[in-house]
Amino acid sequence: MIKQLFFLINREVVIGWRQQQDVVVASAFFLVAIFVFAITLSTDQLLLSQTAIPIIWVLLLLTNFMPLDHLWADDWRDGTLEQLLSCGITGWQLALIKALRHFLVMMPTIFLATALAAILLDMSFGQWERVLLSLLLSFPSLSLLTVMGAALTVRAVRQQLILPIILLPLMIPVLLFGVGLSYPMPVGGGGTYNNLMLLAALFLFFLILCPWVSGWVIRQG
Amino acid sequence: MIQNVTRLRRWINLVLPWAAVLAVILLCIGGYWGLVLSPADIEQGETVRIIYIHVPAASIGLLIYAMIAVQGFVFLVWRAPVADIMLQAALPIGAIYTFLALATGSLWGKPMWGAWWVWDARLTSTLILFFLYLGIMILRRSFEDQEMAAKSSALLAMIGGINVPIIKFSVDWWFTLHQPASILRLDGSTIHNSFLYPLLVMMAAFATLFLVLWMVRIKTILLSRRLDNLYRLSHQNRI
Image: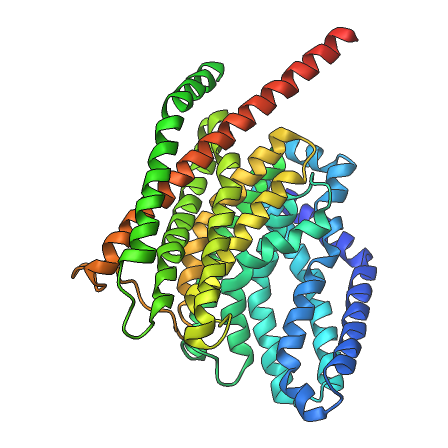
């Protein structure tokens, strides 16, 4: 059983690694979008460095939805999914592994993108560190949610268009606390410690909920 | 299933006319009482009258969502097609109620707070509720397979139902500008009776209005499904 799971994890990681295009395309999108921000906002260095955190968060959330069509849809279309499920792999195990893969694909994107943003938007090293950490802490929950959304919409007609509308409202709690961590002095509510604890609580909650739901959905039909 | 649906239809035919009459009467009473008879507020003046639309729309809109989540659960667990029909029928009504609450709230906010919209906790969570409604409706339409559409939207309604308290709680961590709950409180209501009574009548009116619209929509959906079935049958026979 454990061997099987390791094989599956290996498979997902290999597939994720071979689709380096995803990371490249996502980072390129990020770069172009930052360019547009600089044009529309202002080229004033101070203003840009002050708005860097929201820009990074918004763009990363949008890139989060980009590598999704490979996540379940490929396996579903070529029949791998059915085979795996009939081999005794349960839906939630598969969902958990997919979430891990999505996180692993997003991680290099996050590194690359925030580093680029830090240079282009004139962020200090400390600022960059903070943003990177907060992103790495919030993305596990976001990956779990994303995988769930992708599972829900595998058979839908316009998956790419519907997903943000469905998922972003559900992501809001994670966003509030995650973005709060990006700032030295969190906006509203509690301090850094509170935000960390709440993020951890949300992660545990989604860790239970999301794989279970996505596993159930993927087994239907 | 057919039995349940037949019973549902018979029940609706029985109740609908009475509920419609009751809704009209309650709306007339509540409207006249709230908009004409009840006094203007000392601080807010005549603008206070907007609560007679705003508060019922908001609370009934939230209530409808809770009901939808329960129906999603019932549909998924007991595979009751009736629950799916009821869910599908309630969705747009709930969305419109929530939208009405947002729109009237922003009309009130302009003279009172000086802005159409502020990012306050309660406004934000109501907006998210509206997004959830939209998401479920859009998800429902984006499947070719009706069975799958029903299952997915029921599931999303349920997840949203679990998430709504979390969203609300997390959003409340922001500062709050909206007035705290004033009607349902342990130490009694904090608003004066001359405002409270017409408000309660309007709440009853909005609830009854929802029931009427809901029943009409359920009837329509049942008919359209029957039409689909007949069409499919006639097609099969021809082949």
